[in-house]
Length: 286
Image 1 (cartoon, helix red, strand yellow):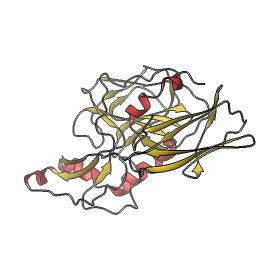
Image 2 (cartoon, rainbow, N blue to C red):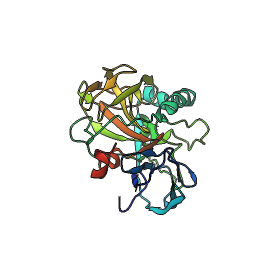
Image 3 (spheres, rainbow, N blue to C red):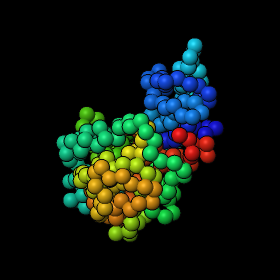
Image 4 (spheres, rainbow, N blue to C red):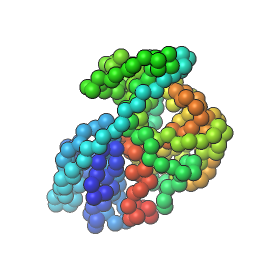
């Protein structure tokens, strides 16, 4: 986009650059990039947990390199207090189990299968998708705490991203995470569809995300569907855009039926709306 910001995505195409083994860097670190019929393609995640600033993108080409300075604008993500029943609070305060789950999920989200499995515009997993809640800092308390005044320290920071490994992070006094997706209203049992074609790489049951389905769309793009009541696919299934993959529920750390929908690029979460609103030239790129 003209003004990238924290939580978004940078879509970059180095036109007419032809090399059999593309090499690119972002912030001086290797960034996966792929050959297309028109050049070298990069999709760069700008997760909410990383800082704003001006950073260097490089694309190697025969006889030299392309260098661009890209400014990532800051963005103010909101804060929320969420009050839980005792049983849900116990779930939120289970660091060992949460860290175990997160390590397992992280290895799946970091998959870099070279083939792009989708084309065309992405669908909504449930009708009426709006950008609500991505990047929000959420602090969790017992329901009984709602009767007292709670003031968050202005310097308080969440432990990390929701369903991420926060075992080594300092505790701010209450379980807390930055929301890594968006919450979509859905009645219990409502159909959840695959937003694009891909391969199901995980159907699991986790402390925070509950019944979970992860779909690999290729080239470092994975979509995530949390808190499902039922999964209607199995690991290894090939799904097409619009195929039903599950039914909405409230499993895991959820206070009611809904869908948590996430998009991960190269293992890092981004706002699913920013991914959905990709530029038109991305849609049919091969």
